[in-house]
Length: 631
Image (cartoon, rainbow, N blue to C red; front, side):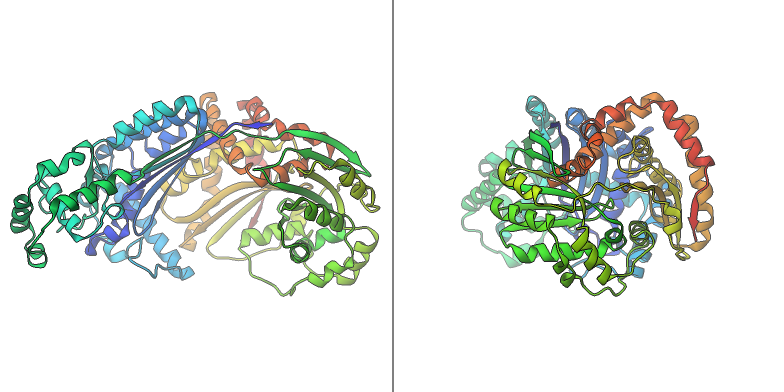
């Protein structure tokens, strides 16, 4: 199987909260909101990315502002071109009073939530700023800061690019980064270099007060600077100090070897790596053998990244399922104690217990034999069963996973391990030792094929009360259901900064701090959940109506052309999630039941075959069907 790639585009700009003026703390973070959300003509950067089914996020730290875009590799060069044009013209972004006031409310909501969770920065300026400083930020502040932002040369990392597009992307990037500043922090060698930099900015760019206004970490980087030593004399530096920064003159009265310092600075600049492009890596699953021994489906594949592994999926028996969280933790602890030359990862996300073992192949086979012949020693690794606090979404998921039960029944678990084992399992491995593997599988006497019973999830969900959280749940498709593809499309429409939920809850309203809609699928049950956290409980009552109106708008207005873009976004998300060890774990779960194997390899085909009418019928049922609202 070939997984043709997704590209990750990272643009990291040398500007962060440490650059905020003392009376405008939070200005860089506010700038991030503007770059991402403010519109130019009819679209913002989110909309530019949405055209290609891409996802975009932005992050502000003390030192940097990063924009990260994930896109299908086929569209990477086109999106980079549009991105560069958009950023080159960002002075035309529509930043009016209404936009500014709306974003201030959103940022203040973020601050209040951080206060409530006691999450603060201890190593520098508060990245969000403070309510007293953010409230004073004006349109002129943001417009002027955008002009500075436009001058910045980002560090650029572009991964998984098709080789035939590499030259084109290089050309686009060179055009975009020409005549821009890079971070002085990356090239500064001493304070003399800072003088040179200040002189250069002042004399060449006519910005005499660049230091005094606090934007002190940019340096012009183009071919001119490589011949810098020929243009600058020691008298020019001296004149610059006298005219602009007297305190420099007091501190550094003599500069003896300007040429040497300039050469050092130039050498640092030439070594500075600010553009990294990696060509597309096509990951393939080569199936060597697919067979069954003693009711165990197993698959042998080529090694992953030149190391051996085994991915195992276990469909637990009823008693294990009721204790799946504790059993999974115990399995992880037990197997990690047996071999120190094998990495052990285990989870229970879809109601199956999933193992991923990587390392020495003989040790992997030893652990595989232990797993197939698991006995009651496992209960010695059960931890304290005291209640641990979970986020409400995780607690709901655990209620469903445990079929309503969270009590440990150690004696019963001990008996079921001795008699029935842990459950029905399947294996995907790179260890091509068929005779040894099949001998291990033949030893199993407990691997009986389970009868999958429908899990009535609504009866398992406990009521939770929170004055600030709105939760609405619909029953949905299972992990192996054909219907899941259409629920994934709805999720793709709503999810992320390019999604309709973000537009409704953040761009059009500022009362909601956290919001998400997603399908979650178990092998025997499925649900779709809407979660909204609001700082003011009075807005909680309007969430249901807002979401219903949003679904109706999608039903009435969605076009075939928009659906194509949404499918691209979904295929991108699926490819991003199906990388590394995850792809082998997923494959092992699909071969548990043989008729699911085709679905694993045909996800993109299944998504592309769905029609607009099928989606609209699904949305209509969602609007009309009863759901569970937890209040």
